[in-house]
Length: 175
Image (tube, rainbow, N blue to C red):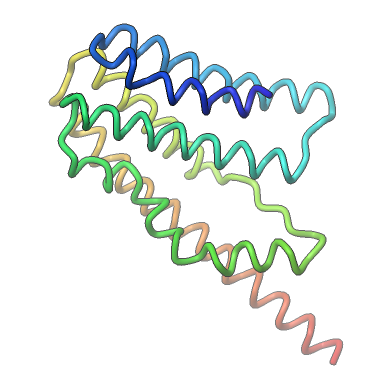
């Protein structure tokens, strides 16, 4: 439920966007649900692959909606959005293979990497800095998010290639 809470929080964003403080409070509420849901799942032993997928999807949807609201209300220029989501744009190439692998193998488990988590944290910091009214700092953070996101996507791609290679070697050895 905490994971799904980010969806209505994101949908409320356009309604409060005229006030940077209100939008910041709403954004931090959404981020709080992201932090809390992982902690609750781990402490209660209710983590699952489905929950991990739902969390990732809710997180992406939440940040994309917030980004679009920031553009729509003139807080940031539209060209920042592809930079904020460089990781996701690069990963889009891998999605078909990624989900195909998930359904073909019971052992499919892909945790976020440190770079992936750092990219998300830096994006969050960038959004906070935008709403706090520091556009120059937000520009530099935006560039950093893009570079970190690119490095993260490359890392995820390398991991998938390594897993595919290991599985091919296993099939070859069995076969």
